[in-house]
Image 1 (cartoon, rainbow, N blue to C red):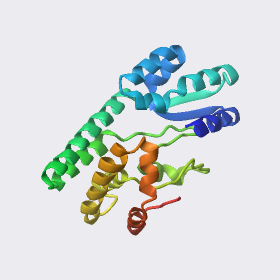
Image 2 (cartoon, rainbow, N blue to C red):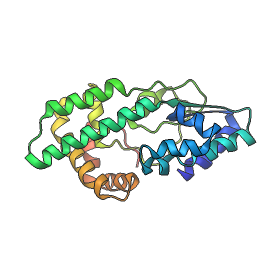
Image 3 (cartoon, helix red, strand yellow):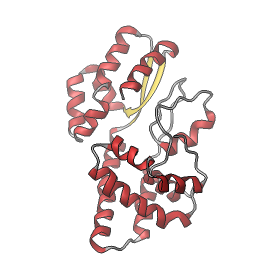
Image 4 (tube, rainbow, N blue to C red):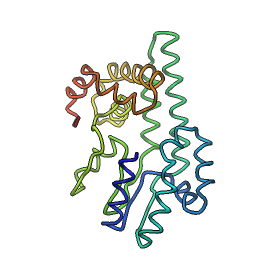
Length: 221
């Protein structure tokens, strides 16, 4: 996030425009009342404060140093709430597996199909758009003339399930991907320090990376 913030200020100075994958309601508060913006994030958990706590200061710096810049936030609080509900339902499926040792693949497909149907975002038509989702990035990268990656480009098991549910990855990968989701969430995320630590552990797993390569999906490490 510090790298992103520093780069974005340079981007705003050059292009005078920027789109961020943040809820519009949060960005509005971040400009008008930074304290209320942080309080809004705290309702969803401290992890969101750690992720987005820098945004109010950044937006106010833009107002001071580049007042003519056009800043757009293209997500919504409703979508954030739905993503949190999805996380709870996913945790329920993992707990059910840990208790019974059985997987109902239809339940997994229903959950992710619902997520695919309700979680899609339309990227703005701006010179600079920040994307923080592997599937969305792959869908739109061909339309971009210049791309800057701030870290490894590797789909998580969650991304793989989204691709299977949307028909962009074969159903024959389902059983293996479900196993990886269970391990990723149940071991790496729950037992890790944070999502960054979980992701680093995931992409350090040679077996997982080789599995992703076998699907033909792009990887940059």
